[in-house]
Image 1 (cartoon, rainbow, N blue to C red):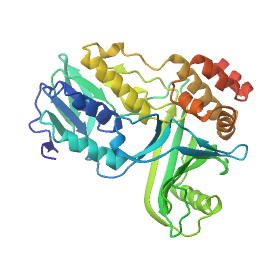
Image 2: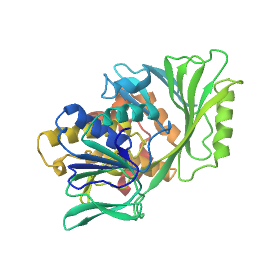
Image 3: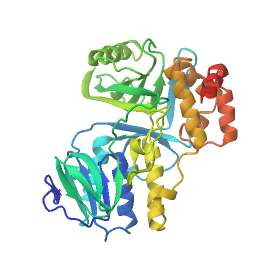
Image 4: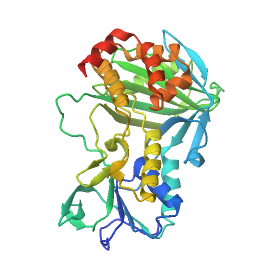
Length: 389
């Protein structure tokens, strides 16, 4: 990329917009700003600790029509299955499609566009903190203070904060293998969205399978628990799952991924200490499921509309409070083991149309639809947890 710098030399004041962190949230917003064509005269700075060169994550989401990043969708499925000992179903989710984007494709696509923009500067350095001095914004990069003028600042660097009294946090952690087989064993048109048939000894645990072809798939082992496992435990469980539930004996592991997402009822303010927060730190990770990609996309659209209309960003509406309430209640139940997660998700899919469940998980349902969904769940633990809030 022709004008990225690894040092802070020549970083000048007078930026209009600064992005701290160059992950999904910053890039989703910046790409929309570029596409609108209305920011080409603005000086924009993007700071991240290192270039994105590896396929470090996979985003899965569902969508009704072509989204903003349709060009980088790697695979999509219109049939998904839900599997558990209590209830199993293969679901046609039309008009939704279940989509997957690979991290590396997303980053390359965005940086190709960014590197063609003369007004955007990319700097690779670790932001250890930021500050305001005489109303001017600055960052501390590699230990030195760098003043940067009076920009609008977007931050997506997540730093876990000190625990408050009522904050509960579970980890969503997962290890995945992309495997390749000799025989055709996968149905490439159908994704396994959640397979709860695996043992639940550690807490809420499921596998999912995203087939790329009839001979290759991403197989992921996921837990919502307080503690992480040792790496070899994930591997043992993946091996067992592939043999026992997928019935596959011979395969090659082509790629490995591992990740941890915080699932928390911590309140993340959009605007704080002079910066606007995006992504997980902006509250875009759903507390009860860890889904993030589509929430980032919706937020990015809102922000760009607001900027183009010349309206203050502070006035942007947050997530309706009742969705925080549902997330809190569900987290509370999972955290205190009042009802195993496999039972909750089984009931959700057993008693409701899959499209309704997906809309509910997207925070797009109406109160009337939500009452129907909630009344389909085993009520006592929910009422008890809800009263706590």
